[in-house]
Length: 335
Image (cartoon, rainbow, N blue to C red; front, top):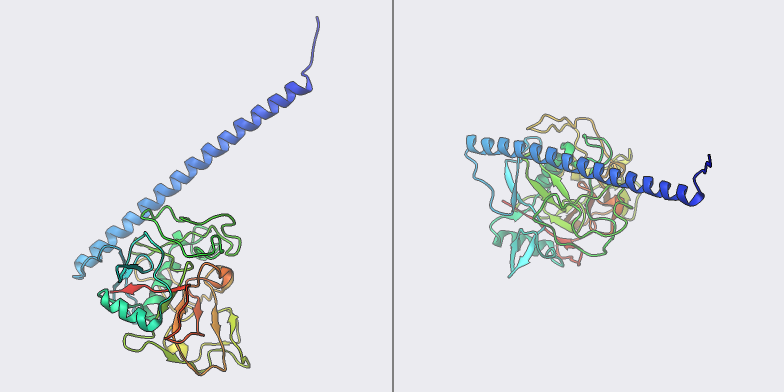
């Protein structure tokens, strides 16, 4: 009998075929897993939205207008339930509008953002409202890269400078990387989802990243005169982590309380953030301040497309006045 073994070419062909079959299997499995995750997310969000609808009905609260998301109030922060633009404000024929299409309305001063918010039938987000939203999204497992609160990092959105410009959003909340290009997550350390979910089940786009957003100390009180905000001894502006033991929030603590979310508990799903302080390593961002500064400052939140690990839902920039503007600064309206 003439026995012949496999030739090298035949072995290579077998190896290639096995590799192709393995790749197909992996792709198929990945697709199945992603579809299952999407289905689970959709079910969770639907349940939260139903709960929010019941809450509004029981408390005589109207549904939010189209393009707005519902936010539960928080007694610790002194806020009642409110509606917030789902998207960063867009300039539609001179009217601040919440819609997915179009680039954000930028190059606007805080003073003008306040005026345009009023003209749109609402007001510029206050610091208490911003912190209410921040605390809420931080309490949602859907917003953490590890799948549970405090596991991995909170999604930071478009902060990696790819592309180096502000982006439009999408009507599809599962299209959460819309417009982003290569290198996703290289600066932020996660998959850069631009969508964060509230405990009401509603979504909010670009709450971190894309463009800075003006807030105000309170309605009718736009700015705050700085006093001992930063690290004692500083005579220049620096980025500081919220976990830094020497960081002083000075009189800012009376406005943006609780600045590091200590003592906060989600009013709906009872996720307690009491005693937790998070820094840039968790994706929440940093504060830009100067301990020696005593000027009247307006509030900029969230970071923009270039800011990497300094951007986040708690990011706060305190080196601008109410009359300053640039192409990376926008705003969002609340009602």
